[in-house]
Length: 392
Image (cartoon, rainbow, N blue to C red):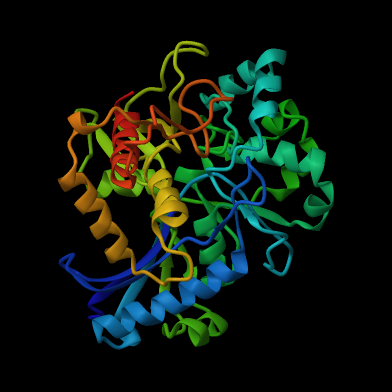
C-alpha cells in the first residue's frame, strides 16, 4: 500500500507543501512566502507562472525532506484562498497575472450594484453580498477595464484550481470555492447565466469551468508535471477544497456547535449551518456550500489579519539587502511582545492595509505616534490590531 499523502496549500501569504503518512504525521514540508505584487494602492496580484515554478520546487523539497520515494505517494490534495481570479486560455496558459483575494479594485462596482438594486436580486440566488475581490465582481471589472484579457480567456479559475490544472492537465473548479464566487445558484449548485446577466456580463458565462465536488477525483499527474515536480506520473489528484472549509474540517468541526477562527491572510470566523441566513439586509456574513453536502458555511471575514504583519516585517523590520530567514524575523516579533506590555504605549494600528472591516474607504494607519514610540511599540500595535480585528 502507498503510505503517503501530499498536501498543497496556496495561501494568500505563504505557499506550503507537506507530506503526511496515513496516520496524519507530518513527514516532510517546504514553504515559501507568497510573492504578491502591488502595482497600485488597490491592487494585489501574483505571477501565476512564477507561482507554478515555486510549487514545483516546494514539492521536490518536501519529498526530499521526507526521504520517501515519490512512487509511495498515494494521492495529492490541494487547498487555497478563495475568490480573486486566475484567467487561462485554451492551452492552460495564464492570461495576465492572477488577482489575489486581498485586492480591492472592485469597491466602486460593489457600491454601484448595491445602489442600483442589482445586488439584492443576485442575493436571491447566491445568498451572498458582493465584495471587492469576489470572482463575480472582478469579472465585471475586467469586462469594463481589460476586456482584451477576457477575449483571450477560456476559463476563470481559483488559484488552487490553476495549480491542479498544471499538475493534471485539465481545468476544473470545485464546489466549496465555486459557491462563494457570487456566480452560483446555491440551490442548483451550478453557475447560473441569470446571475451573469444581472451583473451585466452575460457574454462571459462561457468562461465558467466544469465543477467538481471537493471529494471527487480531480485527475492524475501528467508527464510534464511529473518531470518538473519529481512526482510519479499518474499519481491521483483530489478535487481540492476551499481553505476555509479545509481549516474547519482539520479542526474536527462537523456540526454547528463550534466556532472556527482563522488568523491567516484574512481574519475569519466561521461555523456550519443547516439553512442560509435570513433575507438580504439582515446579514452581512458570507455564505458558501460546505464540505458536508447538507450544510452551509457561514463566514465573517476581512483581509485584516497576518497579511498586515507580513507587510510590517517586509517594509519596516527586514533590513534592506539582507536575506533574513522568516524564523529570525518572527523571533524579533516574539521578542517585541515579551519586552513590552499594553501599558507601555497607547499606539494603535488599524489593520486596513488591503481592505476595511468597516467603511469601504477606510485605510490602515498608526495612531498616537510620538518621539517616545519605538519599533517594538509599533510591532506590538500591529499584533494587537490583527488580534482585535478577529473580535471586532
